[in-house]
Image (cartoon, rainbow, N blue to C red; front, side, top):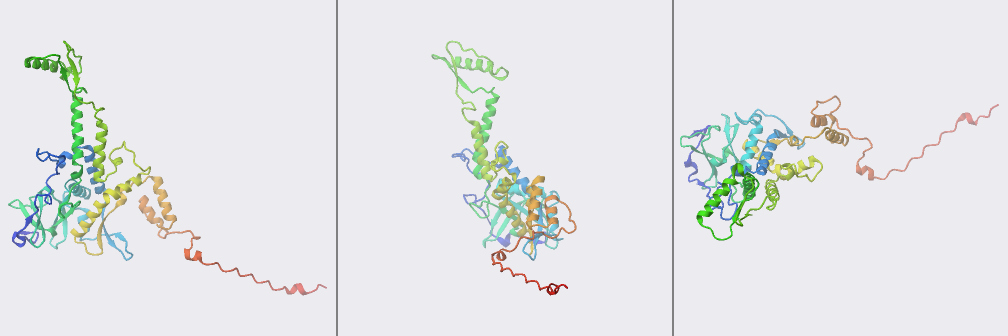
Length: 432
């Protein structure tokens, strides 16, 4: 079978062994949210967990924040600094990953697969010279890693028309060189990532059950369910008649009316109210648990929670260091390897897109950077204000009184006395 100039055959890697479905095996669903859930076929799937507002917000926040950071092609210069550059061989695929996605949409799909399934599979489409001209994020549920007897890795793909993966049998096997596999939390197998839903799925189901219970409670006129206590013994026929009469008089549009119970009957609630059950505190716990599992500060998904820092930039830096940095580094490394970038090329996210400073903060940052000699005026103009260069602004400035520390530590030489002025010959003459 010939695909993109490569001759692929199962005989070359036979027998290929798929990962087993045991503890160290493939990852079809999130495991048991509570003891006994497996026996009840009560598993947790991403589409159900995303119904929880906190889980949805965490996933969408990380996806969009990664997507809005521009991916740059950089090169290592003679000073060891990564500087943005361009290349006709590698820049086009970064500007347009494929024919139906923009770069933000592409990286959002990349992160969505990684967050929900722990694995992202990107299929590489090559041109005649062997260079990668398009990248396609595959459905992780339709990709299975295979291991050859010599330890080589292959991937079994199901048909994907958008990616151009079409086979009569509906399946195709490609070597690892044609797939970019980004994974995280490889707890059970080095080729199988584990999503955060593994840890927070139970909390999400807990919160969804609270919401369902609250919905039913308010649909019942905010009245708890209860029983009617009847003194003495009654027949089954009387029980049925009494239940029918009560439901007819106090359900539907008649809910909340005044009931009359004769012969010493009493109505006794049997369910707790929302206040008694502390539903608000329970929902807050589930939201904090989900946010902590994704590494997102709770203040970024719940506006009622105050951030620990008054400066929003400090909160953003915390969010980047504990949540986004590992994903960004993983994507950059995978692209460097997947695009087969030769030295000195590499890829890098523009993290400045994460922080939008106000005018006062930008002005102060530019002033400090220029004043300490860290930036030339033109560099500060471009970075903080998006302005072009001005004449004479390419040189960093520093105050003249600054001297090296070793010069300051040297003893100062003793002052040299000024020479005495020579006597004036006119002063020796005596006037006549």
